[in-house]
Image 1 (tube, helix red, strand yellow):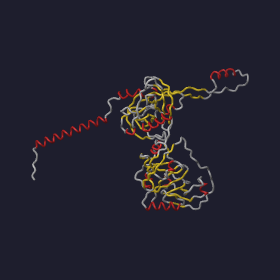
Image 2 (spheres, one colour; image 1 turned 30 degrees about the vertical axis):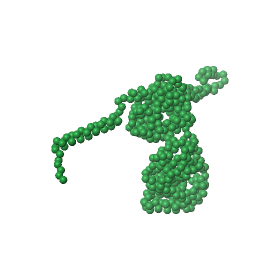
Image 3 (tube, helix red, strand yellow; image 1 turned 135 degrees about the vertical axis):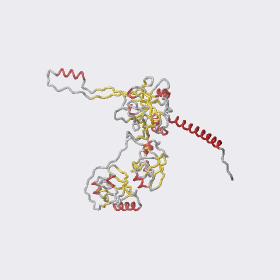
Image 4 (cartoon, one colour; image 1 turned 90 degrees about the horizontal axis):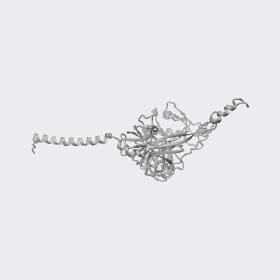
Length: 493
């Protein structure tokens, strides 16, 4: 078969047309992308619409002042007696009180007057006043508050419907998205600032359910309790805290995400209190060494260090050494996520829990319990006695000297009479166990998720791990801080 080339002019024409079409499509894609990523020309329309829904919170509380100086003891008939008596009568010796005021922010979530703010804004307040954007002042009643998430709900009465805002989905917000913060910094009144989401999932050690959005939008004292909006005018966070060595904004502010806020607010509006789910386990972080010891693929999930007797986990046969990877369909990417996921789960709800045990995935059914405000932990009373141990054994690969449990060692190291395992009697200062904070008196309950009662079992387990090519072994220890798992690197002989 013979082929014939097209005339040059046809080639040129086809090439020109293809290039033009390609250029046009590329320009359209670029324009759309540039438009999606560019900053808004102005936030004025958004601010004008949202400002009426943001309020100032003014609180007053009674502060007791200490007693003043007491009248000095004077001899009877002293010429200064009447002078001092008159002075102290006028200035008062008794304890006096004064009114203290503070300011914060909040926002209206319903036309009938429900207002959201931070718990720390209204804490210990005797009177709470909500000041609207038109300076109208309304007395507020506390509906409910939750100290663990630092949220509170107020209720005001108004003759006309109030402008309300809606919650958005903070889970869809991404780092780099534009946000607008409105509040009452330094008592100045409604102030609008803008910025981006700088980070997600921040833990600032303010509470058990920290999961903050970080922003560079200016947030200062008085902004607490105010809303953080997305560009659709939806509340995706409640401004709560700042990081500031100077006390002013340095571009690091934190907001409680709406995914945390909304369920708490709904419960407070309904019953004035928050009920949280409870699993009944003590957990710890899954480290790379623990991953290797348990045969996991990645360092994710929450390792169960111990199970509370008669708790939901115990009744569902969750055991120490299990790694919880999925709870109620939600992946536990890291340890600190599990308490929040469980707490957000409805009390008495039956859920599926996927765990890693014995080198494979297992699914269990768990009925979620209710978390009490206070958990009482039993402690062991002091006891002391003579060490009658005569069967110490050294495990070089761990840098430990071990002994079977005896009554004398239980007394010496203040262990419960029912304690079982192998007691650590010496720790090499330069050994791998010392690097992990293991101390004399700690009790090895398990190695490789199997119970042990004498040092020989531990030596055998270490030898087996080395033979299998493992780089570490997993110990379950009982110490003064309770049960915990520790993965120890095996030293090369």
